[in-house]
Image (cartoon, rainbow, N blue to C red; front, top):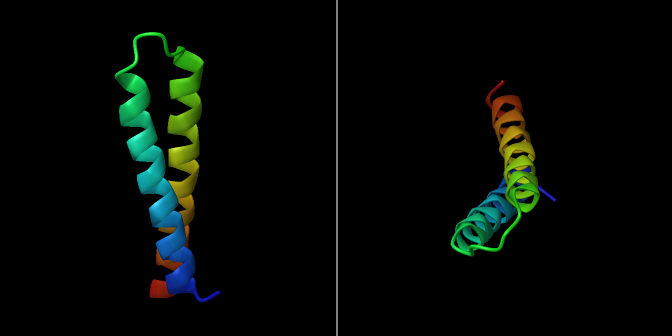
Length: 58
């Protein structure tokens, strides 16, 4: 898989998690742990995206 394709995949997953987070936050019965887990997963993906982008710029 090329770096560009990998970045696109990671960005799609990040967007999917963002949509899931918005959906979950509108539900009054959602536990804080679930929201925190989604945010952690989003942050990990964002870190991977930034790391790949910085590697391709050098």
